[in-house]
Image (cartoon, rainbow, N blue to C red; front, side, top):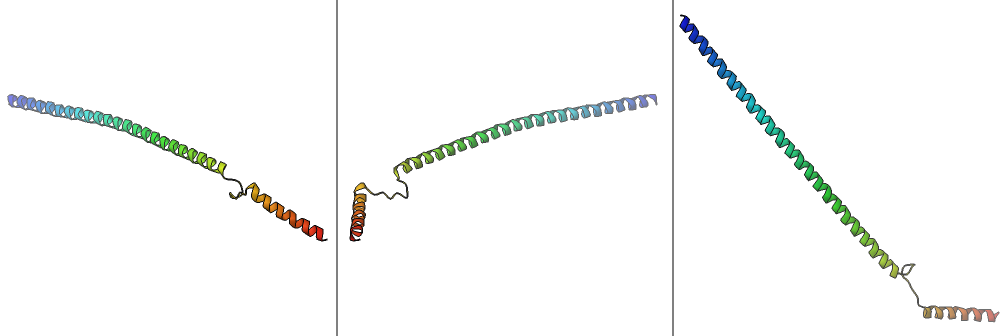
Length: 115
């Protein structure tokens, strides 16, 4: 009877050791899994920061390009406006004015002398 009891105790000890070994293996696997997930999360965060930085650079480049285009348009408009006379661009040469002035002058003299 004692041998049976000893055999049973030894068998229980073996079962307990096996269960403990399985539990430690499961815990180790969980730690490995958590570590791998943390590494992956860290890499993903780094990639996100790199992508956001890239997007910022693209946005800055677009803004700078738009500013250059706007400046070019302003310069182009200023160049065009330099060649356009004021008051809608109607320009009369000095000879045309002389003809009008002399007509008015003659008309005034005629009317004044009639008095």
